[in-house]
Length: 266
Image (cartoon, rainbow, N blue to C red; front, side, top):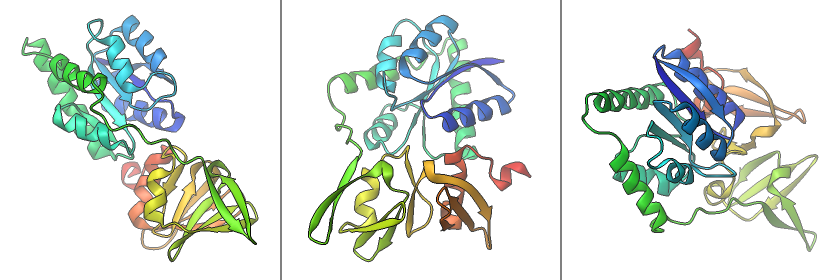
């Protein structure tokens, strides 16, 4: 039985990853960490064979955790990331395993299987991930990465000639409206001259998720997901609003909420 540590500051994502690892029957999660510093301490103390490491955490990010562990612990590491284009590109170049959120069960099993293979190879004396990880870390330290874009925390909309500033955290959901985005905030709504394609990459991926080609929703406002026709669903928000979830985005929503899909529960 392999030992594993999960490090992710997002509660639902952390719980889902722990469940998926333990459901393999091949690994036991010995610690679930909420931040990078905790991940370093637990990894050094418990010396797990596997480490599932979120890239973006509030204290130490995944790269900084890697730097702290260099030469002190060498678990087979699978990075977990959301909308971090540099990370994905870098991981591909250095042949390091990663999971791009939201990932499905098949993608997880693939990464887990590769991590197991690398652990087995290391046990046979055929090398470890050390060289790949050090090369990745060298790129990070050298500043080869594209600076991580700060999430959009507020927008300005014009209402009756007055410029009003709205915090994105206060937005319940965003709706496409031609070349505009309609921001729904409580009982009010505001038009912002920006397309969904332009604003979505600027939103915090931990706070917002697209559920339909027309809707991007604040995850914190979701209270219920009801099945509907042809694989679609209806999303119920805290304020009572009902939004359609298209079949294309339903699996991603389930993964984001840490829920099992219908296929997994059969």
